[in-house]
Image 1 (cartoon, rainbow, N blue to C red):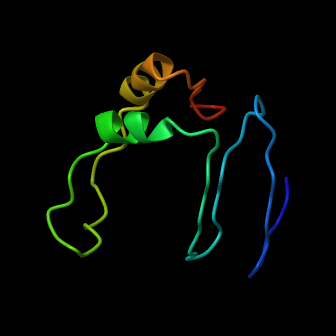
Image 2 (cartoon, rainbow, N blue to C red; image 1 turned 180 degrees about the horizontal axis):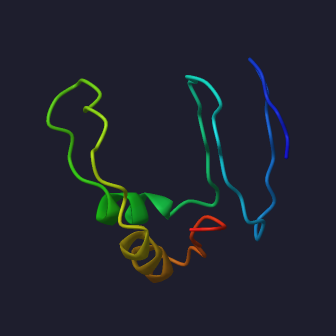
Length: 83
C-alpha cells in the first residue's frame, strides 16, 4: 500500500492489479495508456443528468456487470477481496 498527498504521482505498470481507496475527500486524476478504456466507461457508465455530482447511491454497484463489460474491453477487473 502507498499513501499519497497533494502533488503525488504514481506509475502503475501494465498488468498490475490496482485499487484506489481514498481515506478522505480527494480530487484525483487517473490516466490510462495506451487508450481505449473510454469504451469500457461508455458502456459501464450512464450519462450525467446535470453538471452537478449525483447523490450517493443507495444500492451497491453491480460488480459482476462491470467485470463482464471490462472483459469485453480487455480489462482484467476483479471483485474486492473479501466481497
